[in-house]
Image 1 (cartoon, rainbow, N blue to C red):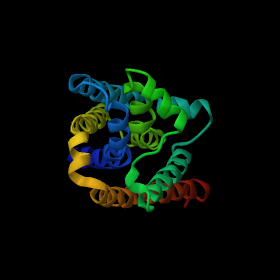
Image 2: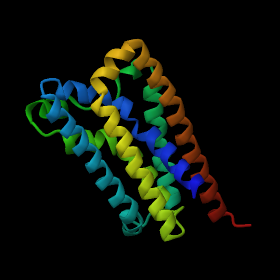
Image 3: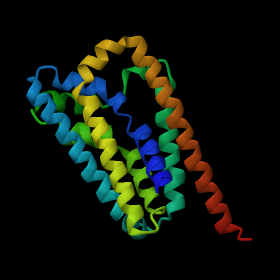
Length: 211
């Protein structure tokens, strides 16, 4: 149980990467009052829980509807995660996660940024969704499912804390610290993506060439 909890938490936290979302959150909430900023952080975390839990329980049905296998998702999700990891490792990785100018402008113009762009796609993006759905295959019992959901909730709670203190963390770390943190997270994310691809390919190979 502990192993499943830690595996889910570490994989999901690395891909969610709330540190990468800090610059966007700070930019979009810089004119907010402190209380409203904290409310936005809380709602973003709650929306993230909702999105990931829904995909965790409904992901298998979605895959079956489109005629996909969990192995296909692991390979495709691994490619997305590797791409995210490489983006964090590049010289501009310290700038955090990227959103389009249109989405950023829309966020600047509205008072509630918790669902978009913070919960989606900043926190619960395609990579996090792919990890969550793949975890469904590891949930052999109801207890396993509860453990995975608990891991999602803990990731959301830690993300909430990071977002609440993001202005202070950004100032404390500075550009150099943010760059170093981004590269560290990028390396971990890259390793997780490679693991997803390798495990997916091995599973597909065992299906195609059964012993």
